[in-house]
View: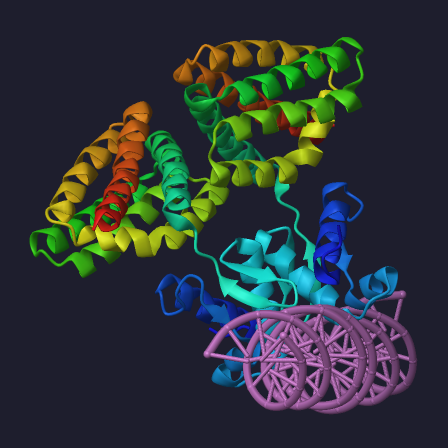
Length: 216
Length: 216
DNA sequence: GTCAACGTTCTTGCATACAAGATTTATCAT
DNA sequence: ATGATAAATCTTGTATGCAAGAACGTTGAC
């Protein structure tokens, strides 16, 4: 796993941010991280530079690194873009999927059914991720798949909240059903539309969530 | 300009890659870059880490950094994604543009007309960039705009080639005309489709170019 | 009691140092 | 002459050191 220290640190810190271990706005102290991971400041700095380039961390000159807080509006914008990319992935998948892709998608979909009907939202979260990744793979566009995975990952904490909302898991699974249908039928435009909506809804739900929280 | 050394290096090296000063596959020697820019290896490494995170360079453990060569297929994939994002930007712009946006877009379009009719493909290149950036801005999605600018930048060397192709400048400008019309008319779907095609064509042209070169 | 100016301390930014792995070169055997 | 092996050299990866700027606390004035 650990090719070198910097990559390991990058992943560790990134995971910490994604899992909200390092909350938005939190200061990332170099020596603190260095002692925590038992290395010197140099690789820590290099890892922070990478996270800065990705947009997860802001480095203010002479004032250290902080976890970026995108803010509700920007998160909504990110969902908007995600919806578009997923739509593209779906439309390409519908045109290009192979037998192997079909098998993978159906397997992931079956797992989603299992965790959905079990009402296990945490398990559904992972199965859902596999389902979407199966679609990215079926698009046979490596670049698109990478972009989708990266964005998916960055939006992870915000999507996770939503699955707790009443009925969201069941609704999500129902939407998956139509998406699978459209893709396997080779209906690119329908797959695109359905996936776009599937993701958009998450963005809208997020807005609702924010509005609800704000009004209290 | 130079907030700090690392950012300056990052930009310098990135520009070097974009402008093909550092060709794909070229090795980026740390001490060489350090002496060239009159700094130590540390900031050079930090800059390379950032470029690695963006996907412009590959860092092979213990074997140094090389400029990534995307290869024709991946470049085509990047155009595919770019087309989608531009389409989204166009559709959002059609729904959200302000008076100020209209002015900026029309001004950029007028400049494109000037450089197009003058047959100055280098000047058109810059005016074209401003035109597209005006649309990103009019989308009023900061995240989308950033993604578009980043991808636009990475595809720069490949797009630049195409403007040299016979009639491409004139065709491009004609397409801009319809795009402006659709956006200012508030026709989101038409703006999306036109922009998607406008960019897709570049990807296809790139493929043609590669095919032509390969067949010789 | 509050606010401001100053000095201390802490943190970052870059340079340098050193160790370990990769590459190249030279030597030797076939 | 060619191939392999080993030594020398070069490069990267990480640690440490030092200087400059920012944060913080203290002291003093009003």
